[in-house]
Image 1 (cartoon, rainbow, N blue to C red):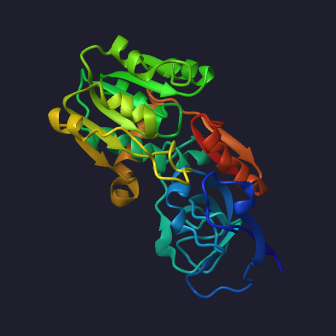
Image 2: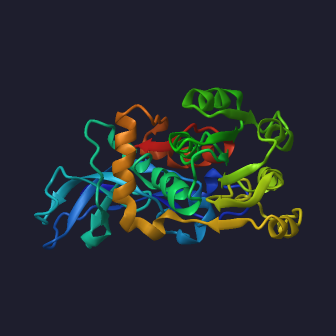
Length: 327
């Protein structure tokens, strides 16, 4: 009997996530199916910082949560014959026995684009960038926007969409190589927050202040950016990767007086709450790619056995663009 490999959570994360928090187990793949059921094999799997933030979604002993693109290998469902490629949130599994096909997401029209983009530009990161700028921040032509974590899966796309919308975009990332890439993407300004002062950098290139802030990282960078927000500025909180591995309470400056004085709007946004709208953003992202207005980069790790390594690398800045595991 064939086996399914599964990465499970061996222990709850305590502070910095580590390899020993994961355990690889096996289970049998069913040989017979009931009507409507199917079995699929993972092709590409996503690793994302939110998996650490929402770690309570993964119980000890259960598969680590996450999305994947899979190919149907067995089927008793006429809608999903063998060979069909599907997107589903089945976690870190090499194979999935799908009993309820309502859990399968509608795949976007990719044309000749790589299938892995269904987890990136046309997946959660791309939809987060698109709807954050258009629906949450309502970015307007001529405005100035700051993006933290700008070389990541969401940030790199958000900055480019900002340019498409006719805005001045300032990006912060953690290596000189990433800064070079951001400039190639069209960011007006890009700074290495590890070697340059965040506050002084913004003051130099945006002396009149910032209209919008697209925040992926939280922590000290965000404290500094908020100082330079204009009156009635808007901030979207999409992540807080700088704090995910903290085991102690965070001591931070008290920013509420600045928020009040400047009448700032701060919104937390989780893209999975509007999944029914994804088809709108997916169609636009494909058009922008084909028009040459939107570029992407993937950091692909080979081998299902390397899922934890790819995930832990997110918190060490090893990925540029979207991190994907090719099973």
